[in-house]
Every structure is written in C-alpha cells, then in structure tokens.
Length: 117
Length: 510
Image 1 (tube, rainbow over the protein chains, first blue to last red):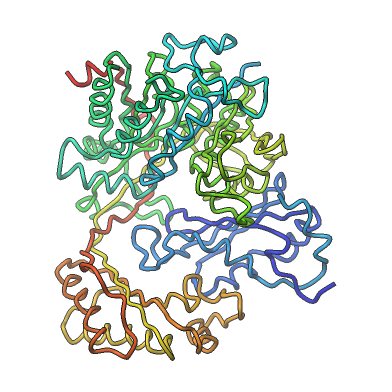
Image 2: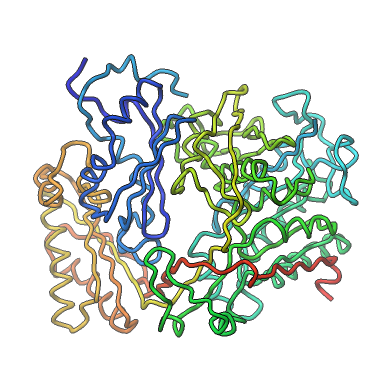
C-alpha cells in the first residue's frame, strides 16, 4: 500500500474538443480500479487539477460497460479550435496530462493494473 | 448470417494520402457481388477479389471491403471550404479525395482497376464540383460508366433569409444567444444530415457517394441500412451502427494512434486503418487488415469510444439518440474487438447546424531561446514583443505567450511537480533553471489584418536586439489568416431536404 497512486498506473485516457469544451475519457484497467476512481476521481477533483485552464464547469459521466468516466470541461479551450491562441487548441494533450494526477492511496498496483491490453 | 465490411481510411482533411489504397489492398480488395452470394447484391459489381493470398484473420469471412468510407470534415473544415468556394465557384470540396481516387485506380494488385464502393463527405461545400472532379479521373481511366452520386441539401446559405423569415433564429446551442448581427459575418451554415441521402444514393446504384455535411457516423450507418434493409426507426440497430461509425471515423485513432499505452512494440509507420465488420443485428467487430501496423485491442477501442463525446447516454446524431453507457467490448482474437450493447432512442427533432462567422485574423510566430536561463530569457522576449508592439501601435486585441518546454501546454499539470494553479508559470520556471532551450511561441488575434502584419515584424529583430541565445527564426513570416469562429445551432428537420443526384461519370463531365 503506497500513500499515493498515479492515475496512469490504474487507468488510461483520451481527450479532445467539442467546440470550446474539452472532454477527457478515463478508462480503468480493472473493476477494482473503476470502483476506486468512482470515489476518488470526482468532477471537483478534475476541476481542481485543471484549474489553470479555467473551466466554467466540469461534469462527470459514467460508462460502466467499459469501466470509464467521461469528463466534460466546459469552456476550457480558450476559444476552441477556431479562436484559441494556445498550441493545444483542441485539448489533445489533456488525456496524457490527467494520467499524471496523484491520487490518495487505497489500492495497490497489483489490484489495479491487470489485463492492460 | 451475412457480414458487411466497412473500412475507413481518412479521419480528417489532410490525413495520410496513401491510407485508402493501403487499406483496400491489405484488406484484400473489394468484395464483388459474386463473391457475396449471401447478400442481396447491388445491381453492379464494383470490385473484385483477385488476390487469394490476402486473408482476413477469420477463415469463414471472405477478404475484402464492401465499402470504403473517407471522413474529412471537422467542425472548422466547412468554413475553410466555404472560404475557398467564395474565391472559386468550382472549389469548396476536399481536394484530397480526387487524389485518393486516382491512387486507388492506379492500384493493380487487388483492384483490377476498380475501387470498392466509396462513401465520403469530401463534397464539403460543393459536392457537385467534387463529383465532376472525380468523374474526370474515372473517365480518364475508362470508367465513364461508373455511377457517382452527390448528396447535398445541407447548405443553408442559399435560403438563409427565408429560414430566418420562417422563424428559425439560429440561437447558439450552448449560450442561447440569437445570431443577431453575426448574420452579416456568416461564411457558412450547414445542417448535419443523416444517412437517408446516402441510402437513397446506394439504392439508385451509386458506386461512389459524395456528400456535403453529414454526421460522421452516418457514413457507416448509410451502407448498413442499405445492405440490411433496416427501418429508419430501428433505433437499437441504428445506434449500434452509429457506434461502429464513431469508432472508425477517426481512422488510425482506433488502431493504435494516440493510444495511451503505446510502446514501440506497436509499430505505427504502416499503421492499419480500421474495418468494421457488421452483422445484421448491428453487432460489430472492429479490426484492421492483416500485415499492417498498429493494434486493435479493448484498450485502443475503448479510448476511441470516449473520444469527443459528451453525455454518453445521449450520443446525438441525425439518425438516432444513441446510448453508449452499456456498450461492452470483448477480445475476439488478434486485432479483433467485438462491440455490443448499444441501444437507441428516437433521433433528435432538430438537425444540428454547423455555422461559422468571420472573426478577425490570427497570426503566430516562434523563436528558440537557448543557453543558461533560457526560460527567463524567453519570458523576457515575450514581454519585449508586447512592449514594442505597444510602442508601434500594433498591440493585438488578444495575445498569448507560451514557453514551450516549460510545461505550459497543459499548465499546472507538468509531472515533475504539482504546481499551484494560481501561479503555474512562476512555479514552472522555478524548476526549469537548467532547461537548455525553450521555444517561445506568441500567438495573436485582432480584427485588423494590417495590425497583425505589423505586429508580426517584431519576432525577427529579437535575434539581434534581444537577450543572448535567440535563434530559430527562419523562413518567411507567417501571414495573418482569417479566423472563422464556430457557432453551434440547430434547425427544424422539416425545413431541410436532402438532395440526391446520381449520374454516370460521363454525365457528370458532360
């Protein structure tokens, strides 16, 4: 049992844009990881993590069939693909970024990282 | 039970030009009618399956593709095409497509000179002109009798004032604001059409279907409805086909591209583009041609399932309101993943509309800043540009300075340190004292093109009149380019009618 766990140790992710909103899908490798994330990876936690992007709202949706959460970060792209002055105007790098998040411990890597395809 | 194979070899305008030919050849060519006795064959055979050496992973399935789809239109692409059409009435379609058709026709290994049936949204703002361009190429290759269909009716510009008069307000889907004075700056307004026009075209015998703005997934849903004879209110099946379309519409993003768990053990230089093998029930296996790079795993497919979606219980297309929440993915052998569990509800009552308006100009420039204190010097360079622009009277309305290499792409999340969100840049610099070089990127937005042209002159002088170690400014200055801002809105379905024209290549070029 470690004190913290990196999200990328127990899940993988993909992100993209919907107009000026970003979405990040986070997929747990295991059922135990999905349960853990349903407690720990809340919309508020994600909003805090990406506070520098200044999202106006963060909503979490669930896809239990594939052990995934979809986070919608409203107005997080500084204008979106057409108007953003950022290099990553389409939010492509938010997926890799969220996987660096440290989460409070509570599960071992053995429990969480299995069946990684 | 018959299974149809739909391959997609383009995910955006500018995707790999060689991918369509590679996909069709590696998949074993086209499946001709005679090779598919279990299906109600279309009136004409488009391809053939000469290559016995190419096999799918499953011996009970014939090799080859029934349909090749090519998806080219991102949210912004239509506005760029509208801009091009405004300069040239015969432009405004995706010019990659004629190039792809020429490449497919020059393939002799698997095609015998004839491509699989193709369904593409390459028509963009000008499907008719796209059909003419493709038809010229077909005719040059002795295929003047090939039937080519244009599916249009999505373009709302010609009747826009009538639509306004009829009570359509085109309010912003997210903010609720009315279109108002933006009407004067509008460059395009296109309804996202569904599969119906594609189905009509295929029923009329079209071998190549060229659409304007249709929903990406509809490129897959159309062939499925045509082949299986589904009703347009068979919501669960339409949802299943929409999931399949969603999974393959971005090309190699489902076959190993962008994959979080990518390693060099997944070679991407010859990445295989995806194939959806669909049964009459709508159940689908996502796979890729044998012998190609990349990978199709539960991991790669699940990442694409969540790509650019909102509420997974309501994935809205013009064809169906699809529920992804209970979709399941299962390993079905090497590079094969079985997709099941989608359900559907009646399609939305209004079509989504992609509308764009002119919103000034943007420009960006980069410099490399190297040596000791690179971060500090690069930040100073950004500030120098801002102040010099102020003095010259060309400070842009919006300006963004990025120090690429200092953890700014997703500020506050750089892995080596948890940065306080309040001061991400300051904190980042504190850990980057020994960073050997930084790319300074400055981007600007302003209503005035002339102002940005003047602003843009402030990059090069930093090489000689800035801090030491500034380089990397080469080539011509970028020209300010027009910003075409996006306005998502909707329109009542009954105000839009798809138009389908099916002609031979000879007739298109007459």
